[in-house]
Length: 122
Image (cartoon, rainbow, N blue to C red; front, side, top):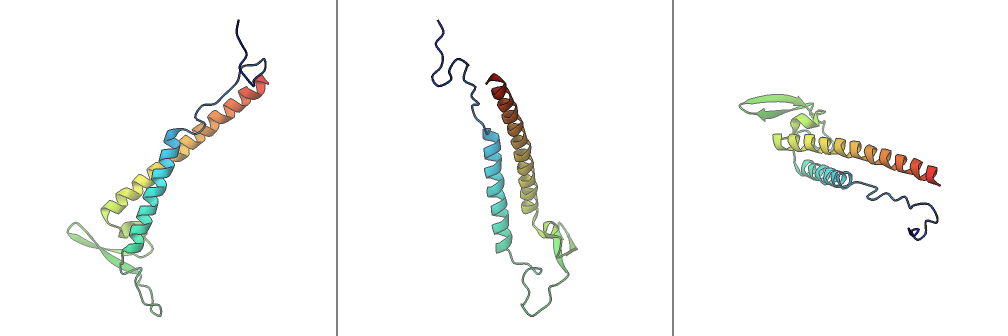
C-alpha cells in the first residue's frame, strides 16, 4: 500500500530542489566582490587623468609604461591605463559575469519547465 504524501492529496508532490544553483550564487557573489575590489583600487590610485585641479583642464592623455616602452593612452581609455594585474582581474570579472548570466538563464529555463510540468499535473 502506497501512502499519499502529506499536503499533496492524490497527486505526487512536485518539488524543485535547489531552485538557484550554487554556481549561479557563487559566480554572482565573486563577480560582485571582484568588481568592488577593482573599483576600490581604481579610486585609491591617483594618475594624471583623474587628479587635476578643480579650476584646471583635464589632460587628454597619459603615458603608460608597458615593458620597456611608454605609450600615450587617452584618458577616456580606463582599461588601458590600468596595470596588467587589474586588466587580468577585469577580464576575470567579465568572465564571472558571463558565467553568472548563463547559469541564471539555465536556472530560469529549468524553473519554467518545472512550472509547466507542475501545472500539467494539477
